[in-house]
Image (cartoon, rainbow, N blue to C red):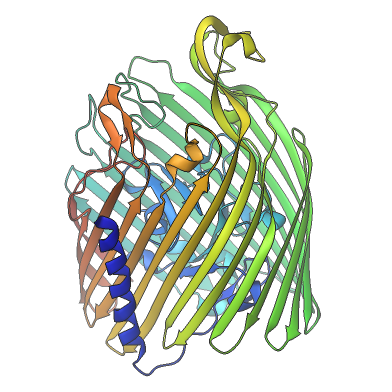
Length: 639
């Protein structure tokens, strides 16, 4: 019944946007994207790429970047806590470890665990746009680019001086459960210099849980600098911190004694140099991420204390051979390290060479070929090819893609419980894990109706081998027994799974300035997935992702008044954990609203927001309860 309601909502959305699209205005142009590390029209890429402007964050009823992603077409965000405490990002039925997140072209994924990949050390006001590339992109970006890539492009690094403006903004929000959110940001440009920064903090005691409450204290601060130099050189630099302390009850266990809390502090530094040439540009990046994760199972326990580092360098050149052909060639290195009282002390080196060719063949035909040679100190050498093709007319684009993808194991999968003196049971890491590998094919049709309306449809198939899963293993078969008890019950990380995933996705986008006093943005996506393997018990990879996913967002402004909504419906496999009386229901629907009034013509706005309007009780993770209806109100000022 709920699924039929979801489909009815999708059809209703199509009819409404189609009605608006009949009004006269300029046609929607092809969005310029950087999915292939060079600016090109979306129709030329041969891929399903969504591009969302950063200003959308302020318009919608969302509180964090991962909540914004949750309501964009085809992205399943499995929320573990409120307002950005922790989330797992899933695209096309992959796991949270099979989506790559990059900021200004540099990898953000943490080497400790994929659970931290949604922690973006960027103030929302700094976001120029977010590009979501669905499907395999390992031939360009390497490990983890299996289900898709989320590329956050910031204003300071976008090198568009003509679009920058001096601005000072602030916001204060209060609400139930002693909610207090505040943020401030600034941007200053003079001549060829830009300086920007921001501070954002979300805080609440949260609803009552079993023996604890759902508190969170989340703070991000960032400052960025851009300077255009002589002889076509530009230097960009950002430093940022992200401090989080939050309730983590049943984030990682299903024990009734779990009253966990967690503290995650991240430091991010990124230096970028750009040198423009007559036929292209050089890009050089150096980035360093430092993270400390402390996890307390209960107030009396000794915390797991994990310190990880990720050091990245990359150099690539994008150039034009002639009007029909262009290319990108690059080299990349990573150094991943961890010091942990739970996982021990380890480090790994990684390197890669890659190349991309882009062709405009005439008569609307486009082809892009990519190949990447990856070397890792642990799993050795992987060769990753990909080819994308498209044909485009004035309104239609037909596209297809085929290629390989892979994912390396993180430090948790390799070394979990290695550093403890005695382990009497639980998950045990395996340093001999091979990289997961898959072959991917997809085909799609895009229809640009004009007047701001576009619809895309894609079918896809992924054949994934050597998937890593935690497998019950007797003590006698454990490869390492130094700190294990012969009487213990263990699950060893192994390359055991083969999963085949088939799916279809439909995305709708509408963005139109109706007249001088009103404008409407709306987007919706529907995804249907089927994953299967031969195991008698369904794999985690099959049981965790939604079988049907419908997510949407819309914002409408008329003169000084604005209203926006966001929502998600998903249907998935039911799960239960009797020791904690928890279950994952087969389906749920969450709907949010925000109403605003701009009381100052150039920068003052009051708003009221309701998260989970219908007070739905649900969990994305077994035992981790999400809040019910949550009311808040605030004021925004822009100078």
